[in-house]
Length: 178
Image (cartoon, rainbow, N blue to C red; front, side, top):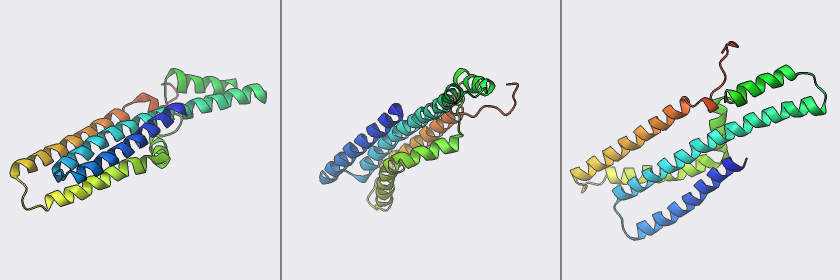
């Protein structure tokens, strides 16, 4: 539980630091474009922490399952060593996850990441709306805005691809021969 909690605590600490810096930047009358880029950079960090905490949670869940099987075999004298052997092979030696990705992702969102990611996302949307409705923006600054948003979307796609193909958060194949 420790590693997952550390990522969440770090993200919460950074959220409060970012909000403090945001209110300071507002008092300095920083242009909306800079605030958008600031929040997009913050979101990249929060998403990275979120993915890492999901991976840590996958490890926690699978080892809790293995520990439960070991305890059942030792304490209750169950003779189901085949299930224990299969679980150790599947979840430890081949590094698969015990629960599916959707449950892993939603568990971490419920653990606080919906707020940690949601607040900067809301501020990004608000400042984007203000920026896009500003009649005095220069064409060059609009290009910077578009490039920033495209880079952010590319980063999200990159993280999703890496997460999708990461074996420790994947379910074992249905075929027993694999």
